[in-house]
Length: 473
Image (tube, rainbow, N blue to C red):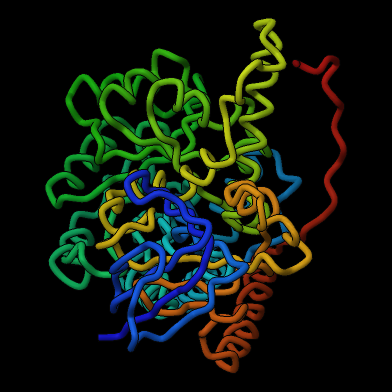
């Protein structure tokens, strides 16, 4: 049995039954957390110094298109749905081959580990066939990340004589092959889910078929749901699905920020979960991220990074933004009610954002019995922040640990990352072989440039549009 003892750390367990500690230990035995508390005796364990460090659960990125990693740095000025679909699904995604998927998923997953994310929901909607699917899973497994592989389907441009993607039900043979084959078990590091079209992207019969297929195989299904009235493939899709009993805790909604109150109540009453990708939603949508509105209904948000072409897919950045974004909305709303500044502590706290980024994501995809908190018996998915560097120093002695992680910490402050008790990052460096990583980076760069050339794509400055006549405050 391999044993690791993290000693004298500041611990944010995110488990009320365990509590937090200014100076305590974590004992890891093989892949699990064995004990949390002061002065743990484990004479034969490998000791890791936790002094001057904060330990949190591993971050959970509940919505990322990992395959997009090699297309970074091209989309921050794009205008929402129009430019993303045209440039990605309409062009560059069609240039991906099997090796391109492997490279994007492997390096994208390693980047997540480097940034303190131990679990990703890989919303993989680039897959044309079984070979692509298998190589995407190969890459996740090689990286060492914990992953929910949400097997999706491509959205190619419509061509004469071909059935458009929004009329195509999910390929049953692929789910049957995976669920009866390499992803049959839910006790492995990489598990299976379905990334479906849903009623915003696909016809109603397609959405209903896909949800039934997921339930038949005991899988969570997740759908992109922008909720813009007049822009959906099926205008009343979610109320119809709810009426048929097809919505439940096994259905996850990506985004959902444009739902009106009636629609939101329908999906939450059905038990659906919602994942906010708040940086994307601030960048390209007319309604704010689904954070405080969920909390108001007694639901817990989960967070995701979404699209690498827009920005660095760091969960630290997303978590910080989620706190600030909702705090801004709280301030404006309280001011509108004549109740600002608040007479008590604010309604959104840094700890809330960290909760969304850990246990929120774990719960949304049925992993909360495995990960999301530092709880004895759970998997040892841990992040250690070194608070002695200039980003954080001298905040830790006497400072609030949740403030430090959410508002001060950067990737450079992440010293160690463990997934299932194994180091994925140690002493500030990925454990992954450095020489192999350098070769993969060269190969990924060639992949990127080849796709740009094939797609005749060039990132050009965009024309500046008019500002609004009045700012809505």
